[in-house]
Amino acid sequence: MTGRTDIAGNAIWAGELTPDELERARRGMIERAFAKGGYICHRGDKLDYWTGVVEGLVKISTISHSGKAMTFAGAAAGGWVGEGSVIKDEARKYDLVAIRDSRIALMPRATFMWLFENSTGFNRFLVRQLNERMGQFIATIEYDRILAPRARVARHLSWLFNSVLYPAERSEIEIGQEELGLLAGLSRQIVNRSLQELEAEGLLAVSRDRIRVFDVEKLGRYGG
Image 1 (cartoon, one colour):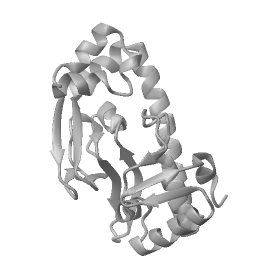
Image 2: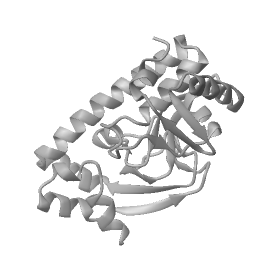
Image 3: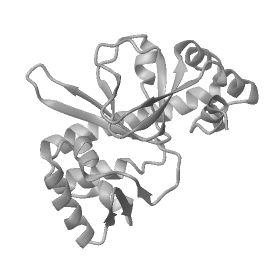
């Protein structure tokens, strides 16, 4: 399998494009590997690519001037992030960090903007994506301010099964407790205890670096 063709053809937005548009999307697409802890971009960087997670797990986060860390969202395999910054042609207002070894797809801004300006299907996808991501960011702020740790773990986990942001139909995800803690802004010990409690309630099952979810909707409402 050649990376460039597979990246575009298997992307969540590919089904929205005409054959000619999809061929245009393939041009210039590249794939890069990032080790765990590697920065795909730093806050303030000008990253002239739309970014997709082919494999792995990525954290969208920032650190305030006072030193407080804030995680906005996680992006699992199949997810695409950064369309707002690409459209506005601005520096990133967040860090994009691989929290496990990851393969990242990069679409040049020129290609992205051609699709944005010419493809009705691509714009339909972007509207859904931006609307869903905005809801995720707002929800994340709510989690951080008012929810107990167990509920924060449940809800952050539920977002990784969001069918709008991530195309794969699945009932489990490969993620470790440390990684989930980085997304939820909690220690590994607290995540471990929270997962044990959620497992005792029959909502999920935990194995080594893998979590099987039995009721995504209940996780998404947990603590509300």
